[in-house]
Length: 269
Length: 269
Image: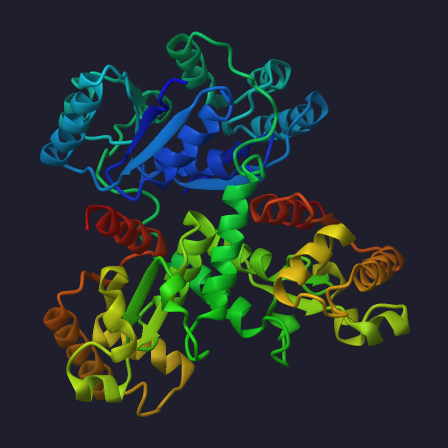
């Protein structure tokens, strides 16, 4: 077996964009064995030379590393491009093309869009996060009137991670409503939700997956039993259907996918 | 004043990568007035035609929209490229170059790296999130032994958002320790932290900013007073210094920046 090939993610800032692009590209080559090294805050020539030395050391062992970089400073880029690696300049060609399109030069400053260059946008995200935490499961007053989105589902169906992701990534205020036995007895939408239909999104999950998740939390409990999980999921799905809610299955969907789906439904709604 | 120009973010999946690249590029053109539309899950020709119709409608009003897209299906891309817009194919050139580098064709399947193609990686992130929530402020047993990182700071210095981001984005288990009056009286590291020095990161903040944040929460309280904020921050910084902890100022840093900085320090440490 060959050693995994080294992928260096080199950014002048957090590296989140660079890593996102690198992974988006490399996911199309699933047969490659790769090892990731993150080199954020590579913002000057000295830092770039340090990365170049790492590349040289790897190359000395017979490897040809891959460098994905979003740096925009020309001198820093030159240092990277001089290193014995396959270097992918992820933003350069796009910036050149946009300069043409806008007929104006790119600023090419260090730093990126993950700083607070839009403070209002950032404050919205932090407010949304506070909101999600304050209105999470079982904390009484959920302030549904202030929510952008209300997630409805049984315990451990994915409401909390989705709310937190909606807040942190999208600045969306998500509250949630945990369905419990008395809601199933009623057979229609819980009363606190009735006034907020347009914001409601049902989350469902495969009962076996729910059983596994709950068992990790409370092994051997009635709460975690497969019978209870099947009962709750069946009733929840019936309720969603009767109320005409959009529903997402979280069994094999990531929070990124669930959140994007909810926002897309909301937009079309 | 001209109308803002429309930027369409078109993805066959969540659109997170496409939006990340688009914003990374456009942040270098701060003088442009732009309006973003997200079009995730544009995975087939029908969906692409619907986006193309939106472009045509905008063009009919005299606008030349900008399309940033990460779709990799050739037919879907053709539909987008036929629309009257400046179309930026964000992954195509990189995929072509990687095909050369790896001497193997790209899979070019729909979907991206934000699904659960690496279930273990995803489960780690969800476990880290559960951990961060369970060990957050004031919940007693903080299980510092199981943490990857422990954030230390006064109330509302940014510990909770940073922990949640470290978990959701990086799969890192972050716990935290809120500094309080009796810790300042001791003048050295709180006892529960002594065994975990290598994991500790101090968070500090401008006292005026802290005052503003706390005032939003508890207006007029001693807790929110500028005197109390100044006192706590001064003492916390002294404690960090004496204990030799790496310190980050959260006053004007985003959670993305704080998290990237912590992980970078951790790596070098």
